[in-house]
Image (cartoon, rainbow, N blue to C red; front, side, top):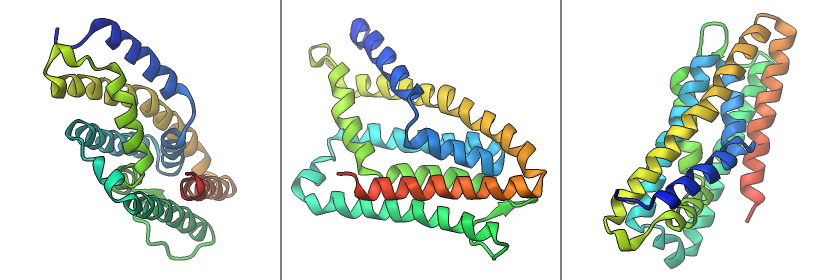
Length: 211
């Protein structure tokens, strides 16, 4: 066994508790599902999960030393990520008013699956807090005495990504089904756009002001 079985159980339980607690990722996927349907919710989850795979690789390679060597890099990446979220939210609010939106949509004004995936990927990649969290969290469940530290990181990362799909993926699909029903009603659809845009703007502001 390349990983400590007791640490593995503890990691799984801790991650499940963290996953079911509403956070930025879950809210983002919820918004995508409401705006684009179950497919968009799943693809947003896939985007977030892909970025988490990158974070795990970064943690395993120890590249987070960049934030320690160049502190301003943390601030720059945080502000860029916040600005991107706010941009998405503003586009949704503009679309509510019938203005041309730069956000690619499918028939019926729905968020495209490609944009849902890309947004989930970029939003998480541009959140340095996710990188630092991964670097601080994963090593707690690794036993260097067993060797093959990179493999232990890979196993924990695979579990993290799998749980991401199970928990947040289910949220995205459920939100998509509810949002699909609402989108068939014009007044309700405007409220969906307002709510989703507000979620994205709120997340962006939160990411910008948190330290």
